[in-house]
Length: 242
Image 1 (spheres, rainbow, N blue to C red):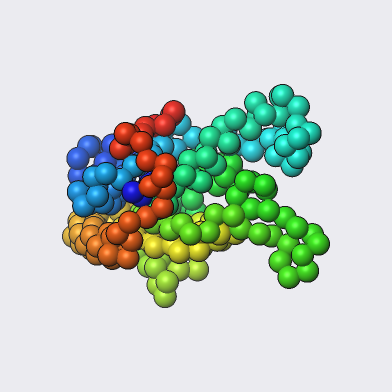
Image 2: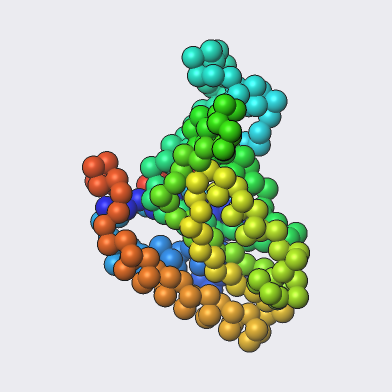
C-alpha cells in the first residue's frame, strides 16, 4: 500500500471547469488523485488544503524551539512546534507528494512557502553534522517522490522558454525538497490563463494528458510501495484545516 500526501496551495476555492472562477491547480491535483485511486483504491491519501488554512509562518519563538534539542525543550516550545510536528509527520508517512502550487508573482504562494518552512526541520527531515568533512547536511526524507502541478498566467515559463529565467517556482521547490532528500520530482503545468481561449484550453488538455502518462508510468514502476505495515482502514484522510 502506498501513501500519498495531497496538498492544494491555491487561494482559489473550487476547481476550474467545475466551479466558477475555480483553481487550475486544484483541477490538476484532483485529476491526478482520481486517476491514481481508480487504479489503486486501497492506497491512503492524506489531504491538506494549504490555500484555505495556511500554516503559521516561522516566528522567532519557532526558531528558538526548533533549534533547541528535544531533551532541553520547555513545554511552550513543544506547543509552538505542534503544527510543524503534525506537518512533518504527514510528510514522513508519505511515499508520494502531490503538490498543487500555482505561480504567484514568479514563485510559490505564501501558504506553500509557510509549509516548506515548517517541514524543513533539523533533526526531523534533515540532520546537521559539523564533524562530517564530506557533508554537513544529511537528508532524512530519501525514497520519496514529488509531483508538482502548477499553473501560470502567461506562457514561456517552461525550461528553454523565453520567460524561464523568471520561473522561480519549480526551482525553489526542487531545492527545498532536494535538501531534505526528495530528489525525484515530476512537474506538469498549465500556461496561458491570462490569455484564455484555445491557448488555455490546449494547455489544459496537454497537462491532463501528461498527468495520465505520469500516473501510468509511476504505477508501472511502483506496483507495491512502502508503509504496508502501517496500513489502516482510512483511504482518504482530510487533515485539520483541509
